[in-house]
Length: 110
Image: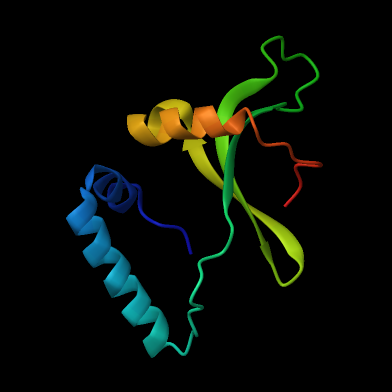
């Protein structure tokens, strides 16, 4: 199930108090569905990537940068597309860009 773009935009515009309330609501909803929440959040790394589109005649490859979140779940490496650089809030994008220089990953598969 994908999240509506209007909902994503509303979340991006929320301040800290609203985000905390949203987090509490999401945690409560997950618990009502029987999802046990651990005491520690998963170790999530965020990095930018340039991506090849695969078109043989594309002269603008690679495209991006695009932002992805990476974490481990059930022993497998998972990833989630987060958006283009200009779609992330400025303070988040700046903090991630500084950390991204120190991160290194192997293959980029999900």
